[in-house]
Amino acid sequence: MKGAIILLLLLLSFNLSYAQEKEREKEEQKKKSKNIKVVPYISYNRTYEFMFGAVPMLMYKVNKKDTISPESISGLMGIYTTNKTWFAIAFSKLYLMEDHWRITIGAGLGTANSQFLSGGTSSNFIDYQTGADFFKLEVQRKIGEDLYFGANYMYTKFNNEFAFETPVNEEVTLNGLGLVFLRDKRDNVYYPTKGSELNLDYTGYLSFMGNDDESSKIELQYNHFFKAKRGKDVIAIRGYGGFGLGNVPFNNLLVVEGTDLRGYSMGEYRGKQLVALQGEYRYNFKGNMGLVGFAGLGSVYGSEVETNSGKILPSVGMGYRYTVFPKNKMNIGIDVAAGRDDWGVYFRIGEAF
Image (cartoon, rainbow, N blue to C red; front, side, top):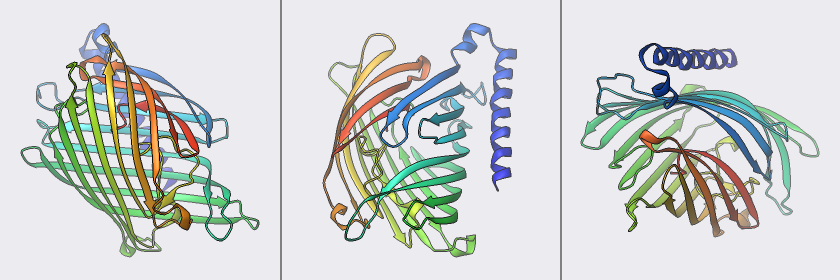
């Protein structure tokens, strides 16, 4: 399967190069430069330490006669960190046929060096290394006004090495098949200023698909956006609930980090369930720059560390934004956040939610 992942990465890279070539043939150089960007990636957190890389991205219309669909986006991401973590990812988000079809495809591989907090009478951090490759495909079809229904498939293969007193190695292959329901009332998929987004996603990892243990995951996300009094600023709120059912493997546990509750980078809080609520103010200067301020609360449940289950976890921080695709208000940026006895720095492509 790793050979297939590498082949898919090459194919997606070729697809990106081909799309770029078509842009060269059909548009003037000045116009093209607005659609193709190579973004440097620089970040830091307490686990992966300094992170360096590059993210070439292309925004384009699949059908130039389609005036209703948002522009699609394709890109590559290559990252290396000073703790010897690395990964390479190719991705595309396609909007087709007057936005009646939405397709997400991604593939990648890499190695992560991290840690987790062990359970038991004396909790302590355990280092581990995970080699992983993955493939995801999701297809959504419009079924009504602002309503989409679809299915997804997720393949992931993990090679875990846990640095216990007696080291433990394990290989885990997960095949997930899911259903997704989306109600999308946002005025812009890349930078909404009003409206809401409700997403319900179910993924089952069942035995007939080759999984050693059966489990499933249900995720409910709700985002709401308001125009602030200044007119060009945005207030955004988000609620999230993730619920793992059955014999959830280590690599599929929900971890407090990233999108839901920034400011946690040590892998300390993980469990079968995660709930979080956060708010964000997005301040836009004149031109292509802006600032964000955010705060939130959350908790994990079903943690192996009993004292972590139900513990209130605060998050607060701020960030900088720069618009790389002005036509679609597509931003990149850096967030700095503090959590409970933890903190993190996050490079962003697009908004946190």
